[in-house]
Length: 462
Image 1 (cartoon, rainbow, N blue to C red):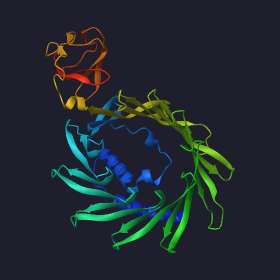
Image 2 (image 1 turned 90 degrees about the vertical axis):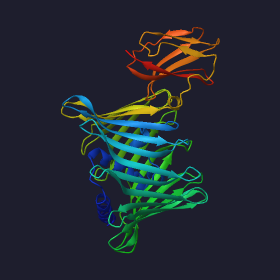
Image 3 (image 1 turned 180 degrees about the vertical axis):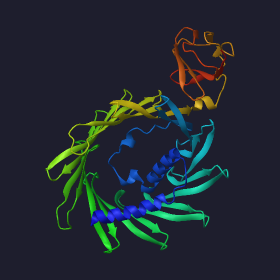
């Protein structure tokens, strides 16, 4: 009965979601659905178990503007095809205030797609997200989705309300509501309601009840579904959490169900987590209980690798099909970062069973607009100057005057904020750039461990 009710409610809720989706290109649909799902279900509060996405989302830097370029691999042309870009604006508190998603047309033009606006309270807590989509035929932005969050006096998330924009009434209409209940700052329950417009009424959907040990660690989460047929809550499933000896990392989450209200809980799924010495997740394994064989069967395994700075450098996702005992490759991804720990590239590959090899699938490239580029002061200390021919040509000598007898670092940035050249100076006062720079504008800086002494424009012409 529980599974049947869940299926029916999922169909109703899914139909409600899908019925509201505008007719957008595929890449915008992907972005929109993921964002809307995250905002509606608020996964960071609802769950503690980790998903794969939690470990490789790109890291935001401090302030400014980030642009993430999305590519898809064309197997016929054997090259990356630019599909979209995501331009995110951050405030001084490192919080996103706007996000613009654009698609790259076959005519090599950027076409507006989605626009996200974020608002915060005085405590820098997210209070509102509004999503709009662009109508190229009328060249206007159309309201579509809105999420409001309120907080209690203790700063805990109290309520989440999501709404759709009604084109008929020209106003926001309710969609989904989630209310949180606390006991001494511990989340003890959250309740979800869905608004049914055809009857103009809020209806109960589900609620979660949380249990804790004496140390305040969450050890259980019990989910209940509302039965409109019997007018009471039905136990649906329970998650049991186990931690390492230090009580810091989850090492096992066990999913359980009850065959009947009077029966004991039965284990049906297990989520295993292995952590390295730096508390980075190194291995995730999902298991399913096969009752006719009375045995646990591994179904999904994700292996994570990190660089020396603790950044995720690679993950490999494998799975076992039904009745198979051999691991099969599914997908993998590689990541690169700058010196500040910001992700510069993520390349995803999928396993091709016919070719029995990895093939490129999707790629994201981050272009970061650093603060060092936005405010250009040709000289911050009169005694240090950079002398070179401007426009600069590859192979020219750059001379630094006014240096003291201590180590300096010279760096050259492109306008995307990437370091394209680094030199260490100590005693010598001239050097030649080793990398061949393309024609364009660059920024040259000189600094020590305390501060930046010089920022100077470097125009390259070859």
